[in-house]
Structures are given as C-alpha cells and as structure tokens.
Length: 259
Ligand SMILES: NC(=O)c1ccc[n+]([C@@H]2O[C@H](COP(=O)([O-])OP(=O)(O)OC[C@H]3O[C@@H](n4cnc5c(N)ncnc54)[C@H](O)[C@@H]3O)[C@@H](O)[C@H]2O)c1
View 1: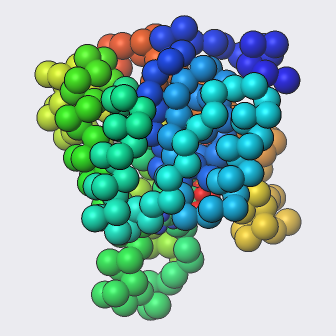
View 2: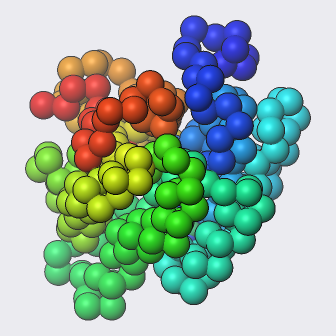
C-alpha cells in the first residue's frame, strides 16, 4: 500500500524536496528513506551496510517511487563525511532536509568503557551530527526553508543502564539541537530533535527484544503494544514539512507514554 492509498498524511511541501538521511539502510533510517520517497522527495542516504542499502533502493524503485541515491559513507570518518555530503548536494542539486539518524547502541558497562571506546561511541552517536550538519549548511541556507532533524532518544530521561556513552551522546544531541536552532534560524533553517522510546526494528528484535525486555517495555508504556518505525517517520515528515514552519529548537518524544 502506498501512502496515497492509506490513512496517513501526504505533504505537498515535501514533494520534490532534496533530503539527506544518515544511517538509512536499515531500521528507523530505512523507514525514513521509504517514507520520504513515498512523499515524492529526492532522497539520498549514507550507510555502511551496502547489501541492505541496495535492496532498499531496488524495493523503493520497484514500488514506483523516486529512486533514492545510496552513498557508502562511514560517518565516523570525517573526511569521507565532508566529501560525501558535498557530492550528495551536487547530485541532488541542493539540500532542503537533513536527518541525522545513524547511531550504534552497542552495550558497554561503566567498567568496560575505555578512552578509546568512549571516543568511538561518541563518533558514531554524536560527533557526526555536528559535522554532517556543518558540511550541509551552505546548501541548507540556499534552500530558503530547510529542516534538520536530529535523532536523540528517551534513554537519558529514563533510568537506563548498560549504555552510558550512548546515553550521554543522546543527551548531547538535544543541547546541539537547541544551540543550532539559534545559530541558523536567521537563514530560516529549523532544527528539531526526535526522542524515540522502544521502537521495534529488525535489529532490536534480533538483539535486544527478549521476552523479559518486551514485558518491561509494555509495563512502562501507557500504550500496551510495541511501537514501529513508521510511527517515528510520521513525526519526522511533519517536522520536515512546511506544516511545522514555526517549530524549531524543540524535542519530541515518540515512546507510547513511557512512565
Ligand atoms: N530503535 C529504537 O528503539 C530507538 C530508540 C531510541 C532512539 N533511537 C535512535 O533512532 C535512530 C535510528 O535507530 P535504529 O534503531 O534504526 O538504529 P540502528 O542501529 O538499527 O540503525 C542505524 C543505522 O546506522 C547505520 N550505521 C551505523 N554505524 C554507521 C557508520 N559508522 N556509518 C554509517 N552508517 C552507520 C547502520 O548500518 C544502520 O543502518 C538512532 O539515532 C537511534 O539512536 C532508536
């Protein structure tokens, strides 16, 4: 079923807009790539999972939506980030919407964290959001009306354990979002953050969604069902569209009402 046949919103202001999504090959990022393509946007995405990315591009094209561009880019390599952002802007002919999504919620206890693993986890969870944005800013300024969406998490608002560096990075993203909103507001670029709760992606199902964790999630949520990536995408579409033209510097939670 396409969005046009479904009960969900179509945003005329997203059609034809140029969108860059980091970490778009799987999980919530895959749903972003699909969701924006369904709206008729010109989507480019970065990832390191080439096979998953190729399958996603084929699937979107075979469904008759605009074919997204996949760029292999390790977002922890800042030279590759800069080159890839610039070549993407050139091939899209500009940029209107940026979604900083790539991350890695690798479990590591307080005792296990080393200075090296701290730097690695900060690089994959926080640092790239700044540097992708920095490289994209000249094009976003030229857009005249741009939207940046930074993926944070509720993990720093709830009693999380076992992922201290990830949680620290995800809290930092909210601070980054607030200051960037003021840095770039004069150029009519909006910057907002999304804080998902427990969203059931294929990876979450495979690695973390044990019966015990599933029960814990449902006990904590007001909504007694698991949440899906498309439910995050629908907020991102709103924040990317002109429908949210006065909203910037904000953080929105999609967690089914976590206690
Ligand atoms: N799924 C959840 O429950 C949940 C909860 C809170 C926040 N989030 C946030 O939402 C976003 C998406 O979550 P997800 O569960 O789909 O994440 P995920 O870990 O499943 O996927 C992230 C994507 O980023 C890519 N990626 C990882 N390292 C990369 C690198 N070095 N270079 C380029 N790409 C890289 C992965 O290949 C993957 O396609 C993340 O920012 C995450 O922190 C997710």
